[in-house]
Image (cartoon, rainbow, N blue to C red):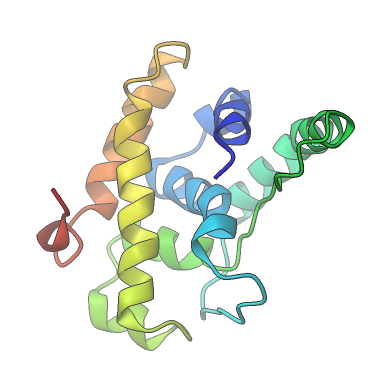
Length: 158
């Protein structure tokens, strides 16, 4: 994964203004290019909320700039956002039940677990990044708790 891109995205002020389920959805969009296989036809019945789409629009200039810098330096790592599953993560973080979200996606349950687990783990780590605003720390912590609920919490890897 492109840690520099993840850090650069989190530094964008627009993410700090999102509600916890929306932040979870945006983070899933940052992580999904690495979680999904290239060419995957993953889909779900839920699209991301307008707030998530707008936040991604606002971080697009930073994404383009970092991609150009990396390309010029001969670093060919994708700087990407993939919102195909952001709506699913947002629905889960907003309280949708397990049967509902697994029935409303083309992914099998194991892939849904992987997307939600990675999102929860990443959100839980945000509080450890001192350079980020306190508001983002708090929102990320709340979002992690909303995503990391049974059955996801029951499947934690130690």
